[in-house]
Amino acid sequence: MSFRPLVVVVALSLVGCDADVEANAGPRQSREQVFSYSAPLRAGQTLALRNMSGQLSIEPASDDTLRVVADLAWRGDSALPRDVSFRSDTMPGGVYVCAIVGKGQCTADDYDVNSDGTGMSFRRGRVRLGMGGGSLATVHFRVQVPTGVRLELVMIDGSIVSASSAPVKARGVNGQMTIVTSVGPVNAKTVNGNIDARMTTLSGTDSVVVETVNGEVAAYLPMNASATVDVRATNGTVQSDFAGVTGGSQGINKAITGVLGAGATPVRVRSINGGAALRQLDAQGRPLTP
Image (cartoon, rainbow, N blue to C red; front, side, top):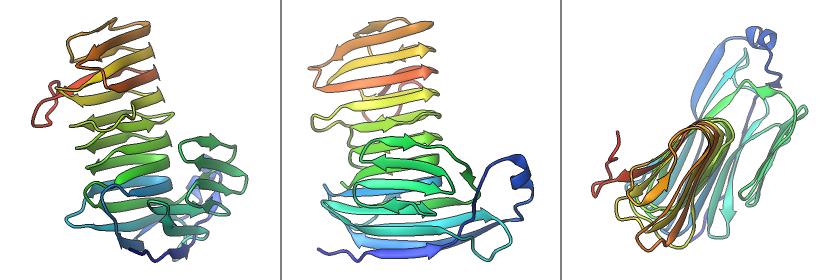
């Protein structure tokens, strides 16, 4: 199987984010499908999808073809903004697709967003923040992913809404995450935002990790989960739907710990400023607690 790499460049003006700049930046504009990419992808392979500002929307495909479309919104008088590029290429075991601003770069292992003093970088699991302004453009990736394809998601400033059928790794800085998969685990971390991670089954030996600094987090596991559980909140509540796990429910440095079944999968749920919850899904994948 082979993939055809594709690079598309459109424009975006990268400016500071103060109120005066916003007020004088011109009318809001948008255009759909400024970028598209498709390729066959097999179960067990990986899609690495990276975005600097906007949204990632992922749903199951009806066949074995990955399809990615990007919509662009911006503020300004230009027909298209300056200085945004989209890159897609193969990597060992899959493909990567990125939205890039300014002099940013994207490879199989690295994602750098930087322009006019703004710097953020991602290297296969870690996001490093630099100093600088914000962007007046947003990218909405709309994705159809084949059955069994693993996801590695990066959303620097915006939301993730994902439904798939294989393990998911997600990293963010500002924004909400809603991640649903029929085959976990989910490993999701952000700085500012809520995370809702739901897994109807667990496979392999990797850990479930759901963590934020500022926000509410909830990990939903199947009712017959085999897991070693550690749920903690520094300033907030901790809750569990599962019998056999113990701990406090409110206050400072509260924790719930315990073993479900044979304890096969480590489960770590954390919030510094916000609540942390371990939730249960029934046999049909419905939450025990609404």
